[in-house]
Length: 197
Image (tube, rainbow, N blue to C red; front, side):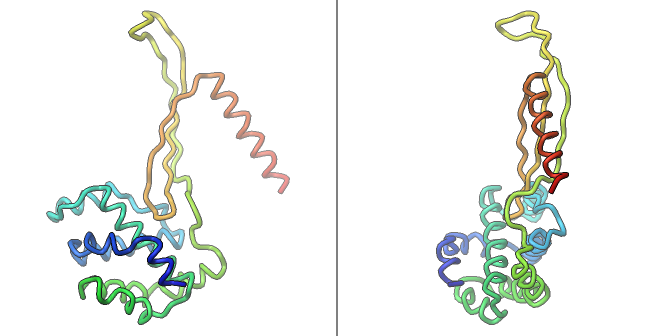
């Protein structure tokens, strides 16, 4: 089953990308991914890691980096799900990855594999998206190309969400004051329902 899940994820497509990653940067990605799975950090900040890759001279796009982060997170969470040993894990990767990368995986799994498997058994591994940050501000639309005097207030909301693989993305949207008041009302209703649970 472990092999099937890895195949279904399409690991072969990411192997070539991983081969160009220096072991120290790969180790950092592994540590951040594991910490995310253990809920010790809200996610893997792809932009910060991407800057580290650029500073190290690694030619990789942000999209390719996201694929590698998903690969690492899926590898460790799937290995935890099936409670595989370090040797079982490495035997599936040995023909596909450089020795230095395998050594990093061995080290991380030996250090964190047992804890990840225990968290998986208790279903405490990070299951889905997590709200990392919530920011808001009030603005005033003064004019537009079709209207010289709008004078309409609005609320801008930015949500930072960490997905399952730990990648943090921002979602920004604007609400009119009536839309925001409706949003606020619904959040208050959710809060009151949660208090009864």
